[in-house]
Length: 527
Length: 86
Image 1: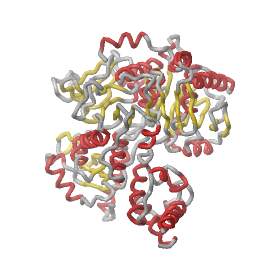
Image 2: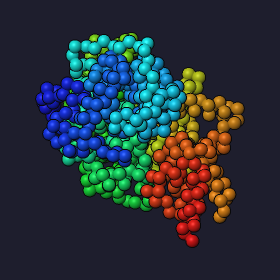
Image 3: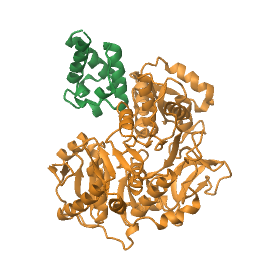
Image 4: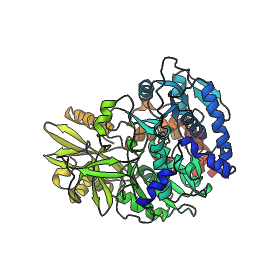
């Protein structure tokens, strides 16, 4: 699609996210909307359940402007409760059930939840949180068994603005890989804009069947996958978690046409293929595979493309941008790890240290402006003002460069390691390590060392690999300048991940500090 | 191979590969999957079972939670597979 189609898309957006169901319920009520292992709903059934759920929520004391937290993993009950809350002007607060008790409670307290609802039928983690909070586990409508916590009578509803499209449709707390969690307020228009443009880029039709395996408590799963599917009248196969051992069967059995994942998922599918000694994994119905959420390594991209016989597309975004900022195009695939051209309807600029635009091809801090940019952080006006300027530019704090119209992510400004006074981008070191055939993935962090930083690499190897740290260090030395080489390589069984599948850098940084302390006292061990 | 030997091997694998050698962190109830073994771990576990016990673990068997939820269920699964080989 082209930039000049954006005004037409914007003019035809529904007002509310819950409005995406009605046209298809009227046009093709028997067409499947949501599938999961426990059953399916057509668009007609989804519409009627949506209406009943709105009444149930209102009758149970939820008012416009109330924050209602959903402790969720993907399932039909989550979809309908989320849409019903938005329909009655309550604010859905989406949290991944896999978060710790501390993280869940922090969000609940910060948002001032009027009620908390738990997707207990698909998530043992949600069940554990429900029990911990003393929630009632009950069968509601045809949603199955869900957890419902007591009403908090002490919270006040937020005022409701006159412009419906600009009202908050989802409150998503950032994963906290770089800072303390912040509540990102996304409006109906934010989410629908990204859903509509994503769907147009991929030419989604009612014949499409998407794999709904990215968590919908996060922005990609919510706008691109869930709302993009429903806006197109397509079908969504919901999975509460990704399992590489069962994903191939799900793709085959459900004749799925679109698989949107994170690099980690594709790396796992490569491992699955190795386990089963498969050189190709072909699904006749599958037409698009795409990655986002974390840097895509060229080795993973190439191997995945060879395995699937399809181009692995790449995209980039942040929660505050609902989330998409750039996306490779189906009609113009990239052979490198670029995240593609800027998303239609979105402006970007790259600024240098002097806050002026950088020269052509140079690395700068990426700023974004457009209908995808959030309303702000909840109850945090100073933090909002720190990232969105008076002209509406949102500062991603990511470092990027533009090359022939394609955006390349260089790293997180905050992740930057300064070694011997030189800038080291962890993504570059990770790319070199990951290129070794025995490496599954790696996470590189800096560890403070007097006035310098030491580079520490955590590396996950293939299960049967016999590689030593010295051999990997030699491999890195062949491709990296001395100041970029890891001072220490640590093999780990798996890398800690955030719920969205990103490598948890903060956790690795803590681990690097602990390892250094143990080393200093002679007690360090490694696998 | 008897049950005690199978259990010892399974325990050692889980403790050394997923728990950094902390035997006390191995849950005895049915919460192994998700808590100790993530999705990548599932592939490692299957590889270990196939190589160590000479059995073939099918994809659909991994999808059955009861097979790999606890040390006890894994041992039971291996015993069943070994019996079906004879």
